[in-house]
Length: 101
Image 1 (cartoon, rainbow, N blue to C red):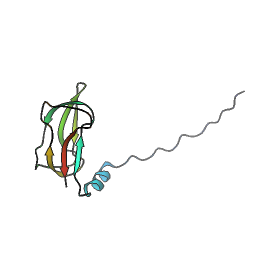
Image 2: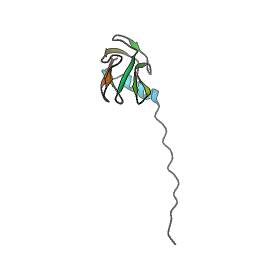
Image 3: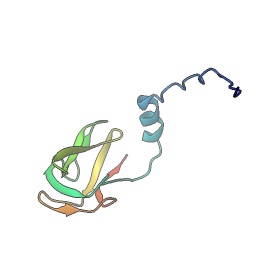
Image 4: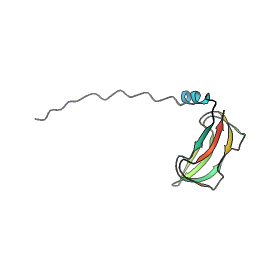
């Protein structure tokens, strides 16, 4: 007869609080570059340089594989530059928008 050991499942880890992560990231005083998460087409640019944006505010919307993917601000900041225009095809990792505190 084979031997079998039944162990309990490990306790789940608590999920990270996104507000805490955004708050900690906000006070770095550095520039942030938001990149395209995947190749796609820019279908909407919702900001311009100099605009003040709130945390989680959509900045750019990409279309890839018939899905729209918004790229949002990770924290409250000012847009320092927008490197794409509507209709541009971008590769994954392309810098779309740059932010500064």
